[in-house]
Length: 450
Image (cartoon, rainbow, N blue to C red; front, side, top):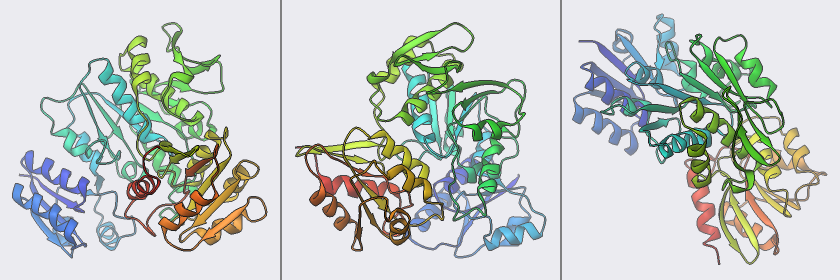
């Protein structure tokens, strides 16, 4: 019997433990946390027959395991990982562990922004064609489970669609998608990475095991994505909202595919229910992935017409008294916030910015907002730094009270015809458990459309 040690009792750690147990392994799980959520995860693992320790890590026991799986929430400088590294112990990420038990082809989606939308939309398009799809990974519990839970599906799905974060890609060994998608690249997670180059290097791991069978869907408008792919083997299919030679493109307002089997017009851009130019790019990426997986053009077009906006991603939550309220709480970095602002350029715009600082350069945010927004309301732990970056270029209001006061300030400032956009450019951890809680609070404060 093999021994599997798992560090972390979050959703992915629990899923990995249950998968390991189901495959006959002896399972040991540990976590420094000892709160209610950790205890609930530990109970699930113990019920299945695994051994769990909370409040400590038995480094020697972990070091002697045949496989060590690390949850993505464990930072690379955590003492337990330093101790294992000093002993020469290697570890893998939870999706890497799950991949070893997948029984079907895999589409993996990564990138800085848009990867959840693209992964969910790809799965939707495959389902529209009648395929059984396993969607999961980094996508979030409300949309799909951890990759290890997908690995336990019986019968296995016709396709696995897995969203991959840089943290998860950092610790792969064999992970190889049949179709890999890179949505875009921009600085992010600089509160965890020492540099942008280090963050990009982990993203590039998606190409680590590429071979001549690999197929890559790449952003043809992002030179950084092209550089990331380097000379990785496999066929490349680019999507673009600007280039006329891309395999997925826009021609006279119509989404078009050409993967070497002739031009296929899908649908007019204005029939998509997804706001923003960046979602046009996401739709093209998903359409290409689905086409390469065997879905025909008419089924892709049907799926694109019926795909709803995802929660917290440029999601219109209400229109009241002539004011459109848009929840883009998932815009947790500067590039995502800039994209959201540009997507709503048709209305006078009030944008809500703030949260926990990720250490990014804010100059691109100032450049994007100048001349585009009527008011920026800044708040939270990063509020002062954002205000300093925007000062003199954008009309500002600094709110030092809680999030409810932020929304109240926006309501007081908004006039009929305006849009209020929550696109924080920061993580939520100064006020909320995650971006979803922040987005839900925003929607609750706004209330339903009148």
